[in-house]
Length: 442
Image 1 (tube, rainbow, N blue to C red):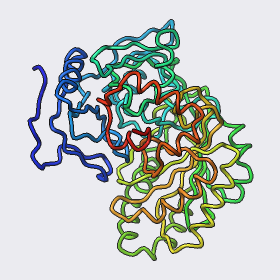
Image 2: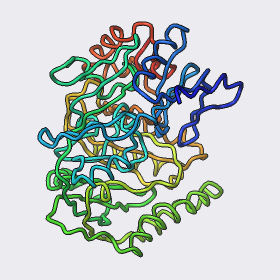
Image 3: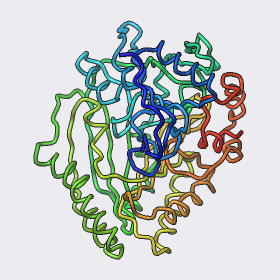
Image 4: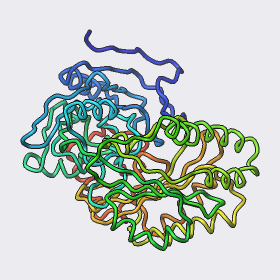
């Protein structure tokens, strides 16, 4: 087997992300079958003066993984390496897809405590960019990391945890690919449990007025606001005794396929051709949602398929600023001639202790704005970003934003700690690229 090497990609695009808004033409692509092969690939690239980036499944909307050097596809480094039931941990190879991890853990009677709403990403790609769900007490996937191993710029394999190389551990759990290539991650897990989800339409005024109560009363609270309307859909997930009572096949198909993917695809296609139709479609679609309750194991409740391709911006705000920011965003949309067919998603996270986590050191609420792939999103995202940055927002590392190192130094108290560590681990910027130059500085 050895290292699969695609030679020079002459003019051809060897890689594009899921949304199709980022492409790259690396000098070569390697698919290491072992950690040793990965170390060798990094050493060789460094000797040749080529930069190295590992790429997961391309679910980032930024050029975080783009490179003109050596593109590492870690998909061969996949699967559960070991389960430690006494410690409550699982160690997985970095290229493992979250979907595969969730299913394998469930078969072992185990689960992550919290997760995001899609599971197509690799474990290392998701954690390195700060993928998160919503939670009162439980935080992002990166915050559930108990240990990790990464190949540094000199080809060494570095093990990190709270006990071993703790300063690297503090940063590398969410390292945006700047500190090395992660090869394995140890995550906290717990015995499999049931969640009961309650989805319920609610007016914008009520959900914003009661936001703090909903967050306090539920383990996982989120809501979606439909622009051009006063309508929201709320979702509360809380632990329950079970048993599993998933949505019936018809209900599941209507909600998850027809509304979330099918009608949505149609709405977006119509909206792209006839933007003026969007507000009236939004009013009908948001009214079509009905309340429903269902119970299942965590990954079946937290995650859902996303087949409609979109581009996304998401900002993390101090939680107490969420309602003001959302009301400002609504006023901006109402005043403008923007036509927005995607709902705006609001989630929360407790403070964590990861250097560059969007929830680092503060109770956090997230606002995510989406637009259908292929529609001009700049005007909407620019207007939204103006609102978010006025409230000291931190953009998601894997989603569209225009911020740079100067901004991040202001909104992350520990920013200098991260860049100093990067200078020590990768002084020659073997893992650098244009995106990291912008967000971390030269």
